[in-house]
Image 1 (cartoon, rainbow over the protein chains, first blue to last red):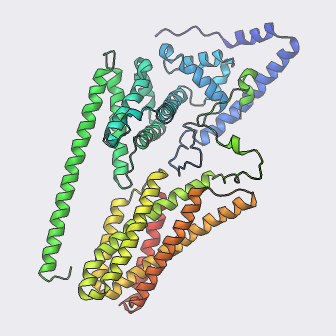
Image 2: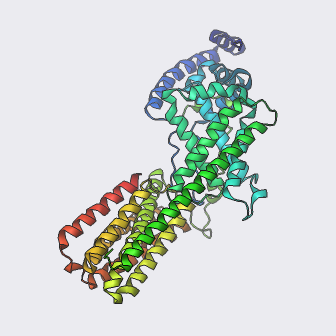
Length: 287
Length: 227
């Protein structure tokens, strides 16, 4: 991939110089220097506490607004949103971030606001798409055609997984690089917590109300299906993603079949156990 | 916090991922209902672990009674209505907490299968030891659970006092939760009285049995609060 032509920093500085009065140039320089020290501080404190992993499954209530999908500040969000427009051409790279910062009128150094660099761009992509998925269901009524008691939670989950995969469609040629970056050891915890947040949101939006250990197994299986479908999608050459869709359908069928088998095995064991206990009691054993 | 870096045109643009509901409530109007009390992260965390522990506790209680009932009832048929009454109440509590957990998207405890096995074993073994031991088990468990509910009620009451001092009020769900917790606590303490009436103090050996069960309950509560 060709590296885009990026203007060096001094060019920007000269631009400020030529386009503004001497006094404003001074203030711009002061602004630049003071901002650098703040950036260093900010970088320091961000290393201490992760920015996104604070997405925890706390008490949710209709009386209290939900936590937003990410905790980036306004200026970080502005740069990241603009940078996403450059992802199809430049990938999840620092170049995309720099171009995004320029588009919104920030200096090139402003990408220092994002201490994790490209990985912040990936995390922002994931978190903002998760937010869009939630908005698509809650405001645009994505699942409204499926609102009936005959439609199972699995069917709604399938629709939501496919909807989320479709959002990846226009950057899918860049997604393999992003997956590689996400699988670096230092990035794995945040990537996994984001994957968990996505699967948890999908199951909640699909109306799942499991409150026992199946809470964990369901989230695990949705995460596994989604993550493997993402990989398949990067190699899917069909225009309407039919290969990915078929893959998702097969995986959901598989997980349903495994769940049914486990359930019937459990039922069988429970039945045998209670028969044995009943038999023992009828013989007068004190059990 | 670094918004001063943004060009001035951007400073006026606000990014909202969730609709804000507070803006309409901020106008002072004497007839309007009081503003709702805003829960902090810490308070949400408290409710999260409280609901998780309560669900696990009621799961264990239903299983203990299920395992005890056949042995106790066989040697003492007159206890059948009492055991049935206590079991039905526990089952009602369990359903209440299941609904609350699903509604508020609280993670159920990861130790779920472990508590299932432990509670069934506890109920079965005390049932085998006889009526007095079974009642001593009920006494120990309900003492711990009752004081745990009491702590939760006290915590929510302190929020209510805090809300009143600011001229706010708790939202309806929290008020309902407070009454539910109080009702359930009273019912648990009623089970404690039934257990003492039915000679729980006669159990042999009383002291080690009760202290071991109480220690187990406290440990289980501490674990379920976190995982």
